[in-house]
Length: 145
Image (cartoon, rainbow, N blue to C red; front, top):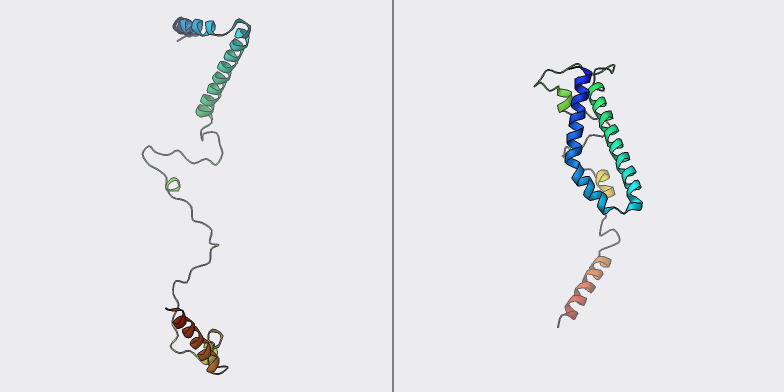
């Protein structure tokens, strides 16, 4: 297709689009006050141009910016075959300490092993504990009607 054919095709397509949009545009223009029509028209054209430029930039990035031009890019993939690197996450660095789920039980404990964990209730004699327990029981029994 030559450029003149393409230009003619685009011209007829734009004329057809304008013919379809003309009634809608006329109704919208009637609703806008005359003093604001220039502002609305300028904003509309600017917005259309911005969207058009974004579409052109997006399509050019999609067509040109693939992995073809970059160095170190992955080799082309056969259709239907997914590389394993895309499916699985890489291993995390080993910075977390291991967890000890259980430990081996000791067969015997010595008195030195148990000393930090044990408080002898009779160390100061039996009477302070016995007196404290008896007072607590007496208070409970006296509070009951």
